[in-house]
Image (cartoon, helix red, strand yellow):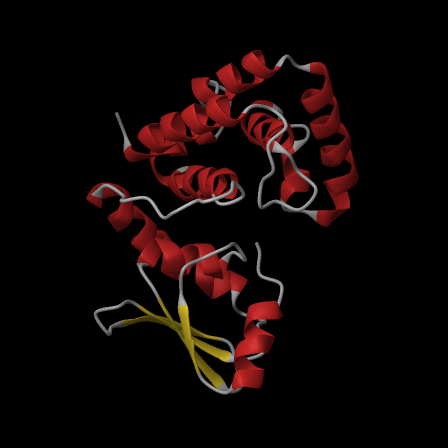
Length: 206
């Protein structure tokens, strides 16, 4: 089983454990909405473009609301668990394209629950997320009001992006990835206080 499939299975287990109405870190979404998002991303090519392209966002939101409200919870989670269908471009790309997607949304569920703690991740997942980090962060941090240096605890700077006062963000690669996409993350900041606050408050996303 690929790393992406293992992380998908872990996400599905968490979804089943918390149920359809649990909070998530995705603003305005409960777990039912997050599951519907994953389903239309892989199973509804007519609606998936709006996830990234604002022009189509209204149609995507409408379809997602319909899927969330009209699909039985167990059936919805089963569909997430089944993975991309044969006609989806994610079918062939699943081992590469879905590792970060499954990890980030898994943490969206986990970290919205009281008393959460970071997981101990398998090394294969850590390596994959570290590779993804530099690619995603270049995009998500490009317009942040500061020169952000992402650094791992060993002292190596993984990526520097943006312009302005330098802010050093230190954490494990998976935590840096979550920070770079605007999620709750266990990271430490170094730099001018105002610059740090500006970087923390800036929107980050694809």
